Structure formats: C-alpha cells, structure tokens
Length: 41
Image 1 (tube, rainbow, N blue to C red):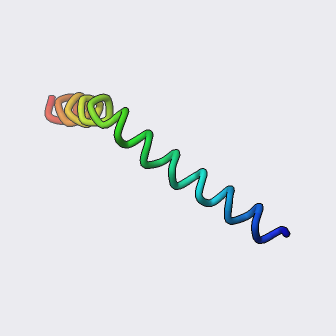
Image 2 (cartoon, rainbow, N blue to C red):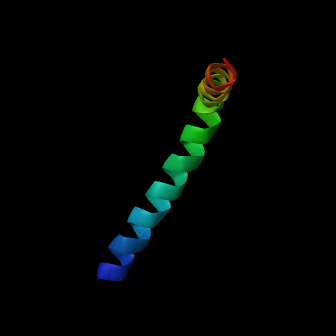
C-alpha cells in the first residue's frame, strides 16, 4: 500500500512541475533576462 501512495505522490509532483513550466515559462524567461541584464551592468 505504501508504494501506491508513493507512486501517487511522485506522479502528482511530476504533473505539478510540467504544469508550472507550461504556465510560468514567460515569467522564468523574463527573470533570466533581467538577471543577465543586471550582470552585464
């Protein structure tokens, strides 16, 4: 039974990561650009 709960948790985490990447890609790219601009100054 424990392995089933573990499997559900792993699937939920993986799905959450994919969902976050899909939804926050623009924010992540903007943050990377801002960080690069600050380093170049």
